[in-house]
Image (cartoon, rainbow, N blue to C red; front, side, top):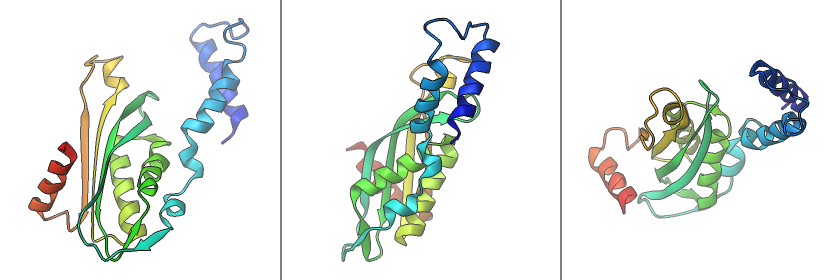
Length: 184
């Protein structure tokens, strides 16, 4: 990530808004934004494979659900944040990963410019591919500030996306069980 280019872009943005980039409160803003962006968009330099590489043998075949994982991302259409919770369920096929690795996988993809629909799909595909899971279900509930602070201004409205792969695709009973587990 090129911090200098980000700084220059922020300067242009501030000038475009009619701000004086040399005033006391804004002098260091371009550098602060560049540092913040390096953290917020760290997913570009990260790979889910790195986190899902460590697995453990498991004879269990039941659903593993990591729910209420905080999600913070930025909408690629308006460059405004969206935030909420991710719920990730999978059916292992002899191997499982550490629970923190699921949350790290969510973070890898959330720390990029995103669409919630694509984010949901990317997480599910990474779990399926890297864990050879028999099935994966990912659900994300998020509030988009592009809808709450501008445009229609409907604070509290949430968007829910869900991706089902493998055994979850055609098994309505299995999907319903995970949905019920999320509500617990």
